[in-house]
Length: 431
Ligand SMILES: Cc1ncc(COP(=O)(O)O)c(C=O)c1O
Image 1 (cartoon, rainbow, N blue to C red):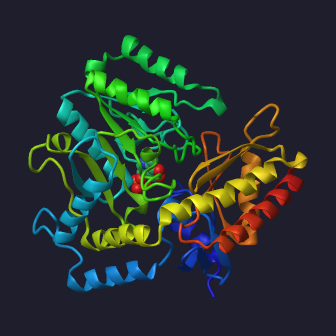
Image 2: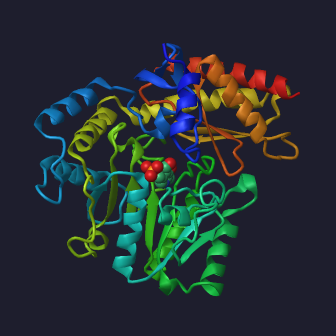
Image 3: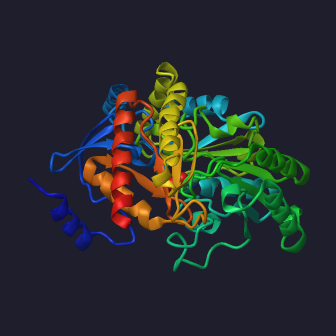
């Protein structure tokens, strides 16, 4: 048997340290909401490969669809001999995504690539250079993704210079002291002091910030952004890469607000674990670029497209939007119960939309000082007890709960039992 420790030693020697790890658990096998490591130990999976396998590990229908496509062909390149399953997926996404007007879709491979292309089409359509993003936002690890990302360490430090004409504004986050009115004021100040709105091509926002700490954009803010974009001819880009595909209790998080974007970026849950991303946007914006300006060798890989069609079928057939809400109620209910305990005033905030749920840890609720130390201890204790959890947040003090939406109530409750025991253990250890 190969041990996790042996593999970690090999990994340290062979792979750069810049790739971080949430755990040192080496996966051998996974099924729905469970993972088994190389040592044969079982884990409840509350990470879902960072909100990717919303349909569970190895969903039999996805495995079947992928096998079938593999028998036909695995790669021909859409730019050489196009294939039907790309076109059909574009047609489906055009009908589903919250886009203001008739839509067109291009496919790519990663989330960062989707963001890059959203910026490309916004600039090409408007003929303007500027892009506005928000503090705490995360948009990927390419140069444009880093420039847009609103967290310096570890994502940006040492990697500059970044592309020009990117502006960052405070995200409305009342828990951390910024109201919607203050964010809007900051945007208007930016228009006055730094860049006239006529030079801004796009505003990119996550309807619920993922890496930033599961901060939910207030509906009135999204409505105000829509109005500002309409007033100044700016392209509103919704980055739904982490929020997409039933995670928040609707197919897309923007649907909770009723606001429509001009361009939506999708990845992660789109293809249930196969590398696929999509840029869905208003047809006039998506058509701004001339032929050859968009694309990529692997973009819209046929196997990933086959998986994505099946993901959409499963979401509908298994009613996964409703499951997201049920799972979210279990998780948030349990977190709120724990937060009410007098010995657990380290839980500063509990929040969530559907099954995109988080708890924020502080030294003491009265001062609200972030506690990344406690967060780290909880994660370690959870791993030892058989639960895979992820942290996030600007201060690294948020635990996010992301089980597959196909997880049973029993397994979600089992995960929450392990979380409670891990939290109690971690609090005791730090006292
Ligand atoms: C909101 C958001 N945008 C973009 C990305 C980048 O996606 P990828 O890692 O597939 O490049 C992520 C990844 O976590 C994300 O959460």
